[in-house]
Every structure is written in C-alpha cells, then in structure tokens.
Length: 239
Image 1 (tube, rainbow, N blue to C red):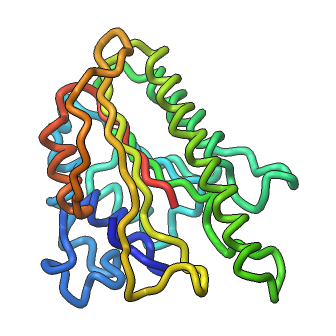
Image 2: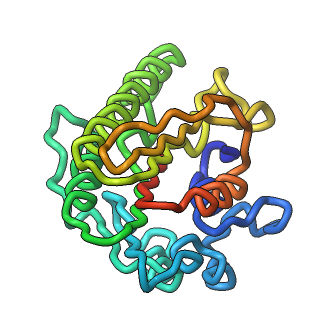
C-alpha cells in the first residue's frame, strides 16, 4: 500500500476504484475531490448488483470526504457509520475500537442471505499517537505499536468469526499507510504496508493455497479481489 501521513484515504481509494497514482496524476493527493468521475470503476459497481449486496462500514461521519454522496454512486447499498456504533468507553481511547468494528462486520455477514461485499475502514489506530504535546518519539512508537496489536487481534477475531459462519468468504486485510512519526518514518522513504488474503470454503475452513509474498499496489489489489470474487467477499482496511 502506498499512502503516507495525511490524505490516507488514497489507499482506500485505490483499492475501491482501481485507479493507480499514475492514472490519477495530481488528483492522487485527494482523489475523492473528483471521485464521481470514477464511480463506474468502483468494486461494487463492477460486481453484479443483481447477485451482490455491498456495504461500507466506517465508525465515522460519512460526510467526511463526501463519502455519503460518492459511495452510493459507487454502488454501495448501505453505509454503516458512527451512528450504528456505541461510543467508546473512556479507557478505550477517542475512537471506536477495531474489536467493535469486527463485531459489526461479523453481525452483518451472519445475517446476509446473498453474496455480500463488505468494505470496512477502521479508525482506532488513527493518530496522533501522543496524548499531550511534547511527547517523545519512543512514547509515540509505543502507542502506535500498542494499537497495531489491536489490529492484529481484529484479524484473528475476523478469522475465527468467519470460520464459525460456515460460509464461503474471502477476507482481505490491509493497512493504508505507515505512521507519520518524526524520526521513524519519512515521507520520501518506503511507503509499503502489509496485506493478507484468506479464502474460506463453505465449511468455514481456510483453503490451502500457495503461501507467497507478492507486492501489489492498491489498484492491483482491486483487480485481484475481482479475480477472486467466487463466493462472499469481506474486505477490510485499517487506518
């Protein structure tokens, strides 16, 4: 994945709309400003709407980046926003937790009776990672990695939950950017983040495929998801 720092929805956009940075040109810095030009390319619109139901899950205000207007045009049948989540407890931090988002995804997947595309953007590990001004780099790294572990637990939660559903599924889990922590990551440096794809059979077992690493751009991941759309798809992007 290729984003860094602000405007991190660029990775989200690349996966959803299949447009790489070379195609977008200067638009790549905030592609949602001109997203209506790309809605025919969006994953939900490229899936057969007669056989697929598409949902966008994000515990935030859907008016941000005009998602409330753009995503329905991109083919999403339902937007599941912050009004469908309980606010986090004080000890949980300022954002809805990854665990709560995973619960919502599994709830939706468990109730569906047709192939569904569920794209989720989490927010628990959104910066700033310093609770007060003047915090040192080590403190910010500690907070960031603590929240990364929450994302790791979410992946396990989704894997176990999908297995219990006993439905065919494709789980795609990826990060959108490296943290913009001074002295740790640099805008001009490496920008890649990990991703993983797991395919489940109708009995909820992870299918044994050749386990290999392949570097992909967000737009290339878009094409791989389409190529593997046999069965239900559950997609997840972690902020």
